[in-house]
Image 1 (cartoon, helix red, strand yellow):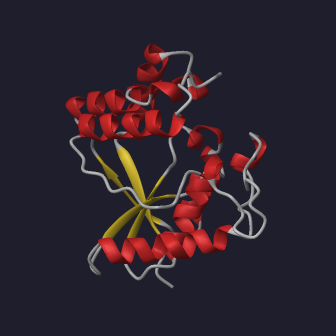
Image 2 (cartoon, helix red, strand yellow):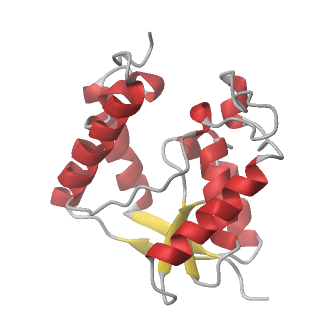
Image 3 (cartoon, helix red, strand yellow):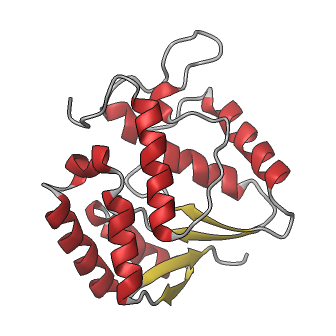
Length: 192
């Protein structure tokens, strides 16, 4: 299997997530929404995203309920003055799309990040955002921050092969991306 996980992939991925957060010094909060590959249509019981191609395609209509559920959980667990950082949904991964739509339905300050490494396949979309009036700010990342970011990605060992030939290639790619962008750029929607 490509991801090199045991039979209980969900538990192994959860451990990877926790280790990644620890390497960043971040706290975490898990919601009741499962990853897209585990979500079932509540009406038919069928998996909604059962093929590789469906993971980066349109959201299934039944995920409208998932978006609402995620919004309710965010409202329950976090204060009203929340500042949220959401993926832009570049690359069209359905979980990133769902997260963005949930964020946009909340009444809070929202920043967006370019979904790395998906953004590497669609840099033109970022260029268009500037022309559409989106505001952006670059946040510098120290050398220690770069290493923490690389270490946090490395904690997701089951996913490295999806994007890179190995850990060394990942570290080089992340370093090059950070250098090219002089930090991490976050985006804000234009005020109407």
